[in-house]
View: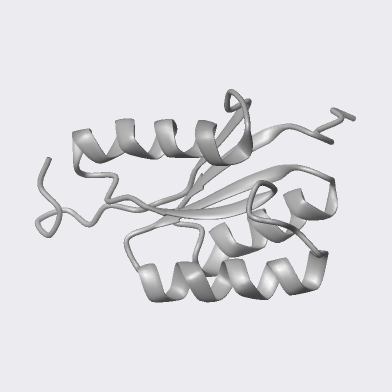
Length: 105
């Protein structure tokens, strides 16, 4: 099995649902996680929950708002994740969904 302990991870659409569960599992395995979502309130709520549950500090678990349909927000997400997690991102869980006709790129 692939050892992910200490790997830096971005999870898009990570504030709830499958993305939230991916974050939980990766934190259990010892990853440093950046949760990203368009829903700031849910994202912060999820980070606060997991910080308490796993005893993470801000450099082990963070939230960055990102609308994946906006090209410039991708760059900001990566830059912020690298800064907040203390190094280059190793894994991307591209979980965020786009709805045809709603989010136009």
